Image (cartoon, rainbow, N blue to C red; front, side):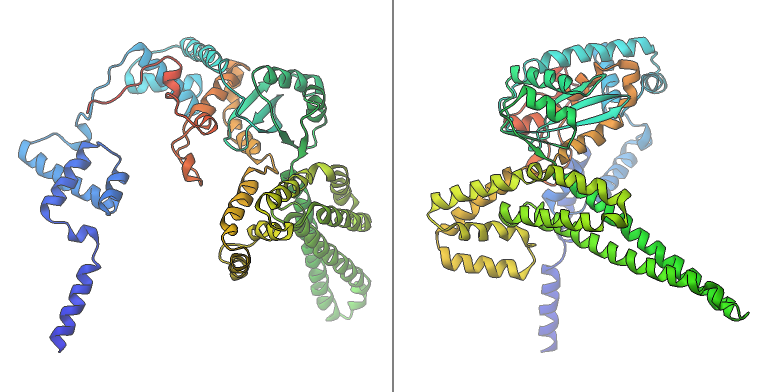
Length: 502
């Protein structure tokens, strides 16, 4: 009996052993040969064989040691891996990659070529290479098709003179990147009209409260609404709440310090000298704590209920929005230097900030009519997105909808999910682009504003190395926008890329 149990346990352990442990010598040899050939990335080879990259490296190292022993090969670091055909065009590609991928300065590119290739290239020659690429990029982008864009996110970034930025929040395609001496309405209007001539026709845009930006769009695109950017509204009310919370902690520290001083003074029969100060500190602490708690609640209501993607209908949001603004006004005298600016901004932007909710309501009403269900049922499906996937309440509501709607439920849920996916509330993508642009702008001092044309081309054509959304990985913004493949960005600039021999 004991031997039977031991045999069963051994078989279970064997069945549960790793793929690496189950490999026989021939399979390990094949894995080592494929790894040395580098015909595919080692991570892909490891996934294909269900082993770790560390295991693959170990097999390669074992095989290389055997080959070194058999043929007396030179040390691994001195071994020739492949040969490069160093041509003038290839050096030009190196310069562009150093500039765009590595954010290298002209002198950095010059030093790299001198130190690694023993090749001298002057700063002026590097400048000419980049400017030639700027012209080629401009020619490519004159043929760009912007008709597929439906939503635009606009913003301004400041690095000396303002830079006007326009991005598609869905594909992250940048269609506007221009340095101008001014950011007034006329400047924005001229650029927007130019975009219209190149085929750009948007359903709506999303932007902050910039006056020149909005006035320029109103002049150039009077029929295109400009919705408010909830990102800035949430950030400002959140910063205000955080400041008041930190101030409350400061009041607590002041009160505790006074209490400690009073305790020491009591030992010298001088406690009364701190009694008035301590009473005042306790009062200020109570007021600061109450204000911080109230502002934190109002901030969470604004973020989680009013400006959230999934939430109540637009009329309920407006009522709650107005209530929050009124409560801010009541508490404004307690911290006018922090609350007033936020309250005024929210008050002036209410309709712009809630435009997305009004659009959602209209789309949900159309879905209810198309699927012949009540608007209440559609809203219940829509509000499921407010719950986390691990929340049991979400699945209770999901089961109830399945029972009530039957076969109509999957199609209804798919239609609602498309509404959620298409709705843009914030210009977060343009803020993301702005953060990526800043590390390039120091190069503009040498190249000038024309460099932005090359940078826009590069950012649109460079494939994403990673993304939370799997369909984006390995694709460029242009490929995501148009749904088709494009040549490598170097090939679009007229270069022939180096490829190693198989």
